[in-house]
Length: 287
Image (cartoon, rainbow, N blue to C red; front, side):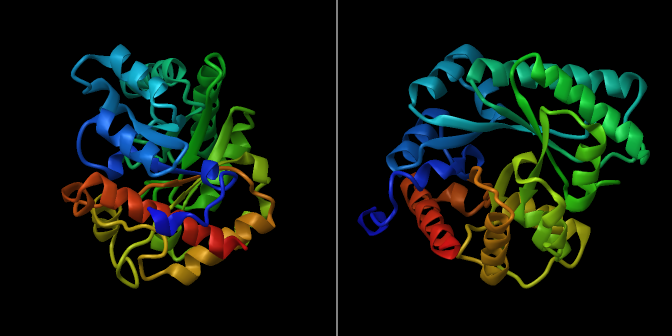
């Protein structure tokens, strides 16, 4: 950890780790993130509901850790549905938002639908996002909407921004995830039309091969083989993304969403050290 000392106390609060990056118990994950010098953590709901002493005890453990919560992961396939499917997802959303409220998490992350049953109607998608944001607002929670690169109808960030803009709810914003931009080899030009205050969060990662060649490879890489910024094949792209975000005025948080099966077989401290090096790398690119 000594090598990481150039980071200042004003820099690290902008970066958080993700509990899905680390193996072990929730308590050990929280302690490791804190010991690495991070001040916030992205929490997955499955870490909380699987806590041996129960959800209330898990919430207490997070609050007692001294870490701020970046957000709660993840509500999937929530928009463009109808009938019993829609009712089920709205009930799941209410449960996730209740956990956010108990946890003190400012945001619930929602990913674009991959369901073949989801409507392509942009008004239907926007209506559901607005309803989710309204539910969140009653709990003083924000909704961050993210385009999955394999999403059924919304699969890139300009489409996600169009849906967020169409929904027009103040408790709804867009999540920029570097993986999905890389998978689509997306241009940054559309970032210029997104007000920086409507970017709910930026998630950073990289991967180890030049390009994603199929939707299935994209899913497998996203869920099992991401690496930290500065470790992969796309450092120039990630550096330019950080520059462009700063240029448009984004001054919000960054979270390292790095899902990698190999990291789940490493000591937690070793993985956390990689995350801290990544934070330093991002800071260096932004200067």
